[in-house]
Amino acid sequence: MASLFRLVPDARAELLQLNSWARPHQAGFAAAQRAARFGAAGPEASAFMAARREAILARLGEGAAAWNGWAGEMTRLRSRIGTDGALLALWRLFADVELVDEIFEGDFNVAGIIFPAAARFSGSAFCGDAWFSEAHFHGPASFRDASFRADAFFDRAHFAGDADFGAATLHGTAEFRDMRCEGTACFVEAEFVGDAWFRGSRFDGVTQFRGVRHAGEAGFGDCRFAGAADFGEAEFAGNAGFEDARFGQMANFAAARFDRGAWFSNAAFDGRSNFERARFRGRRHFEGISLAAQVSPVAQQIAALEQFRFGRR
Image (cartoon, rainbow, N blue to C red; front, side, top):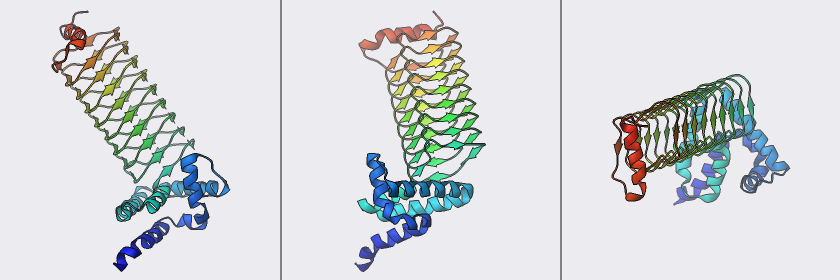
């Protein structure tokens, strides 16, 4: 029984040992938690968050092995904490990666690292290549309004929670091949200036690409969309490839625009599909698609897809 009583203070002490940078700022813990909830940061909260930022950047500078050693210990400690609300809030305060509105000069390489909690890069600018290949995000990840001014690599990244790239701008090649997102994947109104490759990726939750603008090639071949997939009003200036893709639920391409080739060959639509007002200015390829049995309100859309399958315009 005594060991149970020791668990919370021992876990708190271990948290501080893993995050020794925080020891001088213990007076700011509660203030920082209030600031995270309500947005008003006083001097103590500001000092804490500034120290956390410096600690994050310093740890990243030590390389993937050092970072993942810390992340592994934090993950182990998270399982010990269990449902203790106060201690869990403190753990999140240390585990969250908050690099919002930063400007990263040169290449930014965090390939293969583990983010044990939330990772927030909202509004940040990556001036060189951004390497997130094989990164593992245990919590929600936000790149909303971020600017990738060179190439961005998220190939084989794993998002255990939500991934938010809403309104992000990607100027170079965007590599998301073989990526997996277990939560909601949001790319609403994102802009891909270069080519975007998602081939072989898995989307377990809802996928939102509404209003996305693709200036280059867009490769979604062999993707799996387990939840609803919304590409409504998306613009594809280059070739758009959805060959061999599988849509498990609603696939919405209403008012999407395809300026060049649209490749849906051998795609499978297991749920309802919506291509109302979609514009195909180039060649379209719907040969070999499979359609689920659908109810009468979408009969016209099925007929339209059948026309695409047999090449009629």
